[in-house]
Length: 304
Image 1 (spheres, one colour):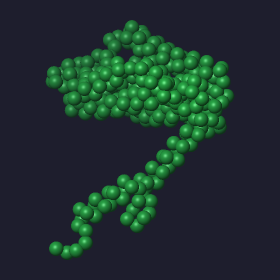
Image 2: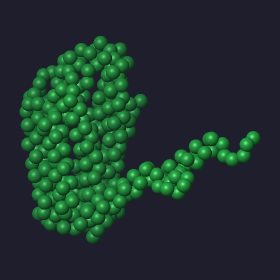
Image 3: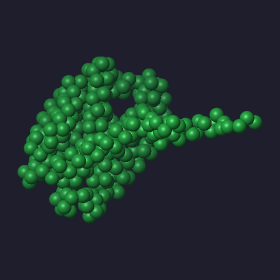
């Protein structure tokens, strides 16, 4: 056999170099540069977070609590109004947040509560945030306007594509906001686990719809979609219902975890003189509780 490493050895070596961020020649790879930039961005956000939290006043904290109450109402009230048939009948169950607020009374109620919540949180960014933090908040607010006000679900193929793009960007913005507000780890974990279940369920539902000729929720009325589902095999009906239910529950749990935890870093800093505080984390874990952990496990089981 000829000397030197085999093709497989060279491939394994190459993969190892890529994951370490370096080429065989000792040069930094694209992946390595990206990882370095992400670490730099995380440090920048952490610095902005420490400065933001240190400048908060009692009035700022009151505004954040008001924002939290408004955001909770924004998650619950429009959904209840939708299922009370204030916008259409019959309704669709399960349904995404975007579907339930796309028209009528639920839409305008959602918009009013969401704007009021942002008015409170925006005042905090304006008074305590740096120029960079204020720019981020303005961009996130604009993304929300893009997603739910301008390109609401059901406006056609291009409009729905713009809506999905905005929704993805808005979720990424929440990841930044989790770090900016120094949200306690249990809430971050619940947010990310919910996001993982949401993406998996969304993909599962998309595959089932394509396989059985069922329209996506934005392209057909609840009555038409119900007839299409009824024409599909029984096993497909059950699988699609489980996927849709997982989407609905994980999407709502995702935002609930963020909203409930958005003040955890603020309260920990005030109570512990900086840092997140082990005692607070234990309290946050207790508040989040076994019930929500079990919900996430149940959602994952729905996809099996």
